[in-house]
Image 1 (cartoon, helix red, strand yellow):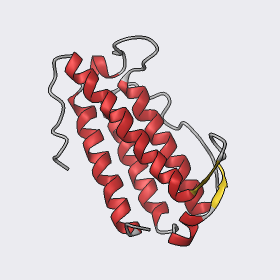
Image 2: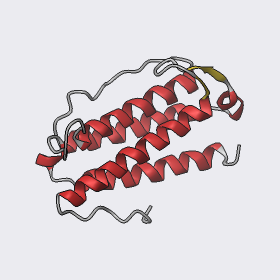
Image 3: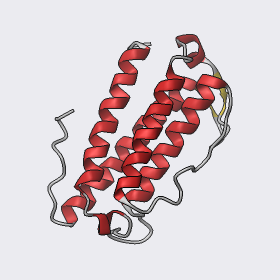
Length: 154
């Protein structure tokens, strides 16, 4: 492993901070409704997916309890979406101390999306998924005439 578990968690937290600032930049009425073209989704839906994936993977890796739930599916305000981000981050931090480097090396069939991968690869996927959707959020903001947060400010 190139990064320690603690450093990897710091990387995830820094990315989440930037994603939250991206979410905060959206006007509330556009956060839940705007998408530039079909079949793209509003940014709020992408954020909910990011939270669900991170929550499901981290819980499964830490506890061996694989459950892909959507606890925030009914969220319809920016304040509630920000709260969902905070609650997910707190849950992940609580589970994180159960994760070991040995556990991250375990390769298993993915209970959510199929295929085999290591638990580290799952966390890497969750991070890349968040970065991908945040990039879409940046494009949405620019199309709305809003300057997104500076990428380099973590």
